[in-house]
Amino acid sequence: MRWLILALLVIPAAEIGVFIWLGNMIGPWWVIFLILFTGIAGVAIAKKQGIDTWNRARVMMSQGQPPGEAMIDGICIFMGSILLFLPGLISDIAGIILILPFARRPIKRWIYYYLRRKMKNGTIIFRKW
Image (cartoon, rainbow, N blue to C red; front, side, top):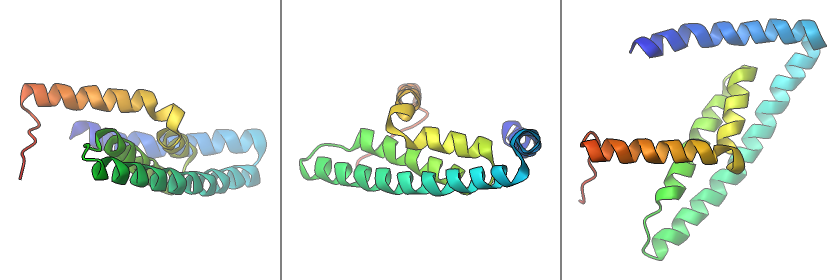
C-alpha cells in the first residue's frame, strides 16, 4: 500500500516536471500537440491490437487450447490503453510500450514468470469449475 501512495504522489509530480521541461524546450503548443497525438495514435493502435488478440484467443479456444499468451497480451493492451487515456507523456510512453507487440515481449515474459512463481508458491491457485 505504501508503494501505491508513493506512486500517486511521485508520478503526477514527474508528469508536471516533464510538461514544464519539454514546454521550455519546444514550446507549450507543441507539448499539447504531442500529448494529443500520442493519445490518439496509441488508442488506434490499442484498438487494432486488442481486436487481433481477441481473434487469436477465439481461434485458440475453438481449437481446444488455453489462450494463456493471448490473455497476457490482452492484459498488457488493456493496461496500455488505460495509461494512454491518462494525461501525460510518461504515462503515454508506458502505454505505447505495453501496446506495441515487440515492446511488450519482455514485459509479457516477466508477467509469465511472476505468475508461474506465484502459482508454484501457492499464492495464486487456479481451480476448474
